[in-house]
Image (cartoon, helix red, strand yellow):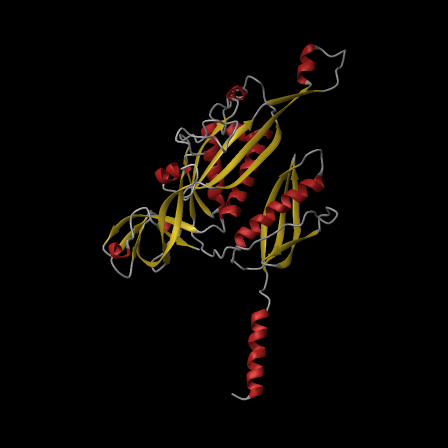
Length: 399
């Protein structure tokens, strides 16, 4: 090949390798609660949420700059997507009472690569267990005694609406024997939690647990009017109520705590002390406090989807037959005929305290999906599973 032709070819390949990836424009919505009539603060938090939504939709990583520019409606904020700085622009905002909604147009690079190399688009399964209330007496106001079981159901609905995970509920399961020290409560077997056992029982990849730390009321009386009647003074009392939730996300295969966050807000409890509305009732969602709780569930659902987006997809092998293996995930998780997975062997190792830990080792074996059912699929190995020592409770992984 002539020297000049080699130079032209080299230059062309070099240009292709450094050519920028065109940004994808995504329109997303964010919401935030307004405190002390601080619109700039609410706008910033709502825009952060909109950016998270846009990044999830485009499968790009993002790092939000720590402030808006002067908090103006037309402000641009910098985000970082796969090493490239892009822009987000607020195109509309609307205030309803103490809630601010913004619509932002976000330019993000359509690069699905995560820092760990994960690129799969399978819906990972999440099991949401009961969220225990740290002080059960606080539920007496409004008769919210059902909060431990209804809140996880509403969280599952919020996660499923996001469309990135498949959330199931097992609200009869309680994870923490000692709520004060959660998530590090010691079990009778000497483990920190029973996550791996619960994950196997539910057949899910991740477990979401939580503790409702505080739903106590706050009573704020307006300045006393000496001429007011006792009834008028009672009406002058403004009632607010705390909502503090600790959320924990675990990998059910290893039991590792992947994410924890505290959500803390205050809402107006603008109904009678004698009202018996129950948590999650139609009436509950119409009051200010219920709307605040709904926004926390929405925020936690976005955080959960964002945290698990770049995690690998893992599913159990529950049966082997000849050169075919049955996998505990199917079309509901997005698996299709012809998809390929890597087989990993599951081992139990013991730490210095003789506590069992799960380890997954790459077996350097590939499996191709031949049949797909809603809840499981059948894959084919190159040779017999016994020859390769592929067993039940081994797993398949897609990065």
